[in-house]
Image: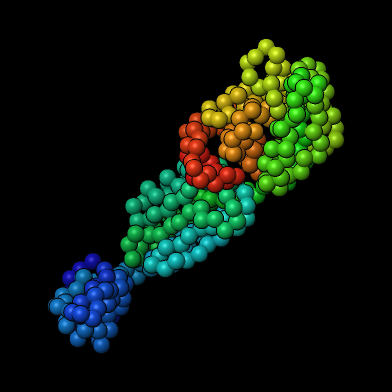
Length: 336
């Protein structure tokens, strides 16, 4: 950036916006940053009291903010991301389908290590809807060197959407009080609604007494009937009569975790029978619109095989704020 006489600025781009004031008539931007000064602009600028101007000194390889932002956004956008140029170098990135947003945090940090580049996202690993804004980018200066853009492009994909896969869900409801008809099951209807909202179909719901072997047998029946995901409800506490975790283990399930750093949902269980996820769902899933279910199940449906470390990372953002206007089913607790 340099200072020149207004008469000598013809053909040069302005380094900032210039405001014009006409008393009683107008006050606002007369010339925008980046405007190329033309001969007819000179009298107007002089009438605005601009004897000198800040103009940009452009190199042969300098790239305008609009082109730079578009190129950086294209390089950062992975599967199922749509771009929308907003002007002044800004580009917004939108989900092109419903699914789980993935953000490569290490690459994002690498990208914005250059102070000339701005890129911001919402939190990753949450369910997003088609058309939802998930990220935005721009370069800070009006022009940046070509090497700045190339370095940013070389960082690679930063955001993508993993679409949800419709699953055939089997439900095992445990508890002697339900099995013997002492009380009516309420959990099944809630899960049908929650899984249905995620595009899944509940193929069958089986009932088991507080018996390890009966629970395990029910799990295998659902597996034999083609369940892609098995949800086991009831009996997830530490009460001696609660046999659900033991029944899941007896079925041969590889347990990833029994317990999650999530409220509500601390007594959650996740395991796998081969490639089929098995989730032990505590009672809070029935009573709360947003719980551990909303944090974990969409990720399973997006094809992620969640390991213990992934569950432990839920601790940050895993406390439900109990918002009065919760956006369930897409609420991601403190991550929205």
